[in-house]
Length: 140
Image 1 (cartoon, rainbow, N blue to C red):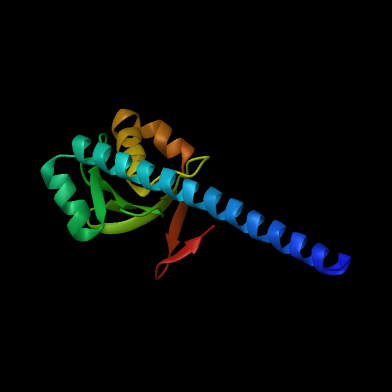
Image 2 (cartoon, one colour):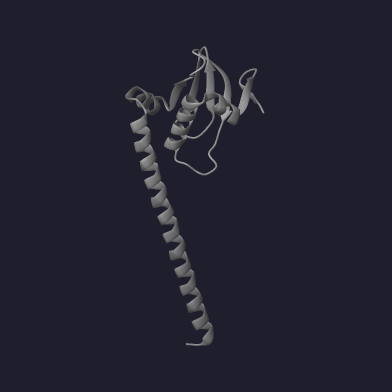
């Protein structure tokens, strides 16, 4: 076996080892994320009432009544996205509030619920507000 063949063989082995290492890292991250999602879903299920949980699974959102305004609700989506502010049945504005690090969707729902119920004013001060204009266009 000449030197060039030996070099190619060693290079091939290094590439295979590198790919196996990358695959193991990716698989480990996937397992950790799956476990985090499972724990987040269990926590969300334990905190929500059965009616709230049914609404979330059936409709894809959770309506949270405003603690300070009886005609206002916050519609939190099941997956991360904008929270709709609904007053007297009409979509008034949308709110954007994101965690600094990636969190499972169930944690996202729970964060919004707990922040709104604990201190609505701080929640509103923290969120970015997107006002609706005309036919539902957003004003940034």
